[in-house]
Amino acid sequence: MALPALLINVVALAVACPGAALLFITRLREQRAMADLSAQSEDRAIDQPMLFLDVRTERAHRLAYRVGFACLALALATSWLSTHL
Image (cartoon, helix red, strand yellow):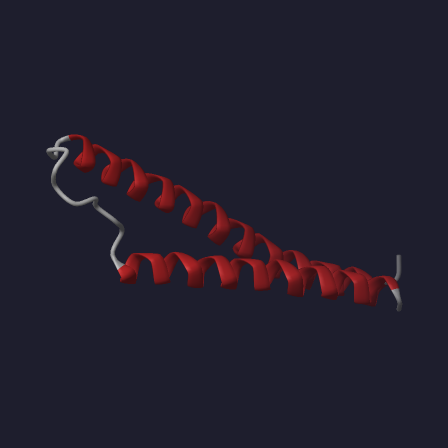
């Protein structure tokens, strides 16, 4: 492998690692939020309305997923580019 291709792969790895970490952390935060919501719902009476996550939390999760997947897509495209050098 030539040096430019190796350097481009290093850049792709540097983009992919934070993206994967962001996806992992977002999934953990989402699971914790759902577990808390489930625990709160179990303590409520049956005739009370259901609890849902607030809109800001859902937006933050969606944005984090989009950024994480965009990082992985950019890393894939960069790595693919390095194979054509």
